Length: 125
Image (tube, rainbow, N blue to C red):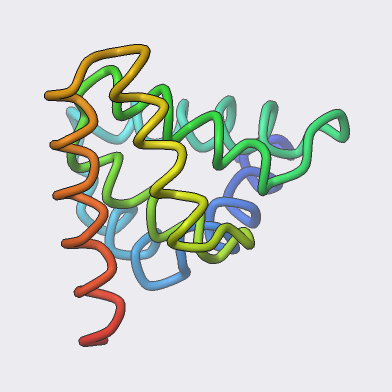
């Protein structure tokens, strides 16, 4: 593994949780392993470790983009990560209201539904 992958793995575990990342890595097969390694190295190692924007701000940007792209699995994951990175439920609500205005009400509605599911999962452990 490269140094960038190792840096990315560390950040990924800090943001998404060690259990989630370990399960994700263990679940990778011959077909998906390259994508898992590539995303860890470049998304988490090359981008999330850059000093220009803090993790909280990166979470804000991710929530908006992922909700607009209609990626529910990733959105739920990043709602949980955003809370770890210091966002409040009220701030997440404001982000999704802005998504609704600029990207469409259906995107906003789905984002609220997914966030509520993420909040319940965190509350229920």
